[in-house]
Length: 333
Image (cartoon, rainbow, N blue to C red; front, side, top):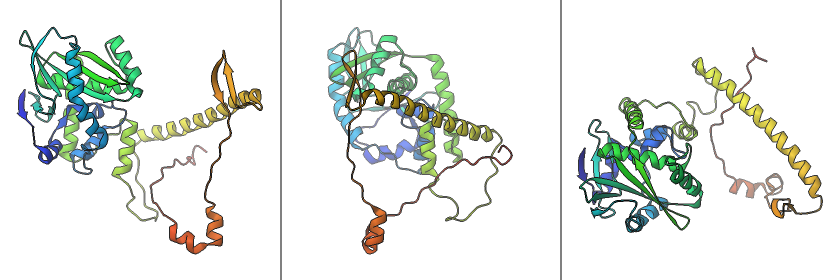
């Protein structure tokens, strides 16, 4: 493991992030991030989009780090004792010993009395993450598809990069401080290194990585916002055979959605019939449903266009987007 102090690097540090995978990006690359995917990270690394490291959410989280770390260390964080720590914000950059494109900037490094090191990753989060944090603390492992899983992956990446065996996640959530122990997982580490190496090959060759998650699909929309023609028909692309299965799955899922919507309407109708003129439905004294009036005001654009076309033309707004549709096969019809 190599270490470099990144204090005060500012814009230079942000530009350098294009040259490596950070621990916080590993969950997206591995398809274990609810909000971002490998395609999104690839677009940032290849300069197709600018990474946003200075938005309100990130600035708020950074400002809370020092307080959260102080509170975690006050609580002992389950540590047998500590003798020193880095100051929040004075982060060091650490590089994986076997793959120099994998780096991390831990929030806090703690030296125990026995001379060993542990790390603490600080998070400030909303109440929506509370259930996943509670489950993680009780079961020693977060559930897949949760925000907590993203953080577990990040700490695992940091432990692998720094060659440490123990870390902690300290999260401020809904007025409660969660301090959760994270032990290094060697099998996950092997899976992670394989995934990161494969990802960086896509960066080096400037080839888009495969779509693995729903966030990847949103990134594809950003990557290809328009077609190669401005409205005319194209010759089209001969899709690979496996994608026929994908198209059939889309058709089947959409049919299932339509059936579920009909089922929901039926069930709602049964409850509404029981509510009749009442606004509120109770079960065992607890409010379980409501059926209340609400008003919506909308502009009658058709009438405005007919009666005041000059005003309509002045304020109309045209947006263009690509719409994906699946067409039924003539052979299967």
